Amino acid sequence: MSGVLGEDMNHWKETAEVLVRLAALTAAGRSAALATVVRVVGSAYRRPGAKFLIEDSGDTLGSVSGGCLEADVREVARQQVLPSKVPSLRHYSTGSDEDMVWGLGLGCNGTIDIFIQPATAGPLAGLAPTLRELVAGDAPFVLATVVEGDGLGGMLLAAPEGRHHGSLGSPALDDEAAERARVLLAAGKPVTETVGGRTVFFEVLPPPPHLLVCGAGEDARPLVAYAADVGFRVTLVDHRPALLDPAGFPQAVALLTARPDSQEIALPPAARTLAVVKSHSLAIDRAWVRRLLAADIPYVGVLGPRARTESMLHEIGATAAEQERVFGPVGLDLGADGPRQVALSIVAEMLAFTTRRTPGHLAARREAIHV
Image (cartoon, rainbow, N blue to C red; front, side, top):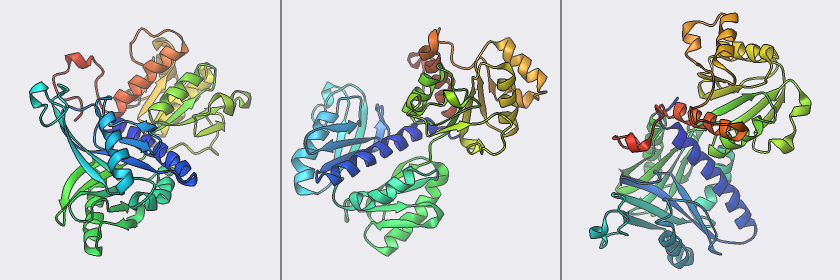
């Protein structure tokens, strides 16, 4: 899995939430501006692609920092961008007090570029319907935006299968940006580059990972909720239809009634799927572990004591390579007690897995947090 997948899925989720809110505002005849982090140098709380929606009423959604820049961005949006409908690129320094002349003197030792653009009018509004379709799907795409230079605010959406929508200003420029977007899709990280004399932010949005939760008992509720909240697309499956109450799992994208041997259900794409097995039935759990390992799911979490998991693996004849993909007992050692805390420990472990991190205290980390 991508080393930045945890960050990517958060941006995908934020984008989806912003687009839902924009649709409601547009339908009501309201206006809003969107602020996006487009470049970071040094230390920063949010990374390129983070979004902050500012409505004409002053209400907001999302964030571009840990709370230190939002007030200024909100004022720029309401006092400048919304009245003029002209985008603005803002440069912020979060250095020490000595750096106050250029920034806010926050002591965070970083510089952040934030692009603020009209969201209910202009290029973004024109692309919004297509963007909503893409974030509801399961394919990667790239959104290119001119953040400085001629054609300020121009946008090009490089969609799957080579299609693109919108424009950065000319067919030649669009072709160049679309080709660059295809290259960046493989790298999977957002960048700000110069294209045709313009500064362009390429936001790369890979689809989020899936989480398959096998077992819909009461303790599945916080796991589904927390996992969905951080950006996983959660599918809940159980052989007991009475447990699959939509009211109890509103964040799940799908509720499936099936046993582990039900071949009529299709599992999500294996390379982008994690699974947690927790039906509280030894036979059912064992069968799920067998199927998930056969499907090449890279992360198979199993609830319960280590001896129980080891017994399952022995009984199904799991190879050494297959056993390396099994996390049982599932979750980080946080001293968790009860369904909510256990769910938190599981989600924390899955985030570490998707970002290829060895869990530890940030205070003990000497490398950059975001790489």
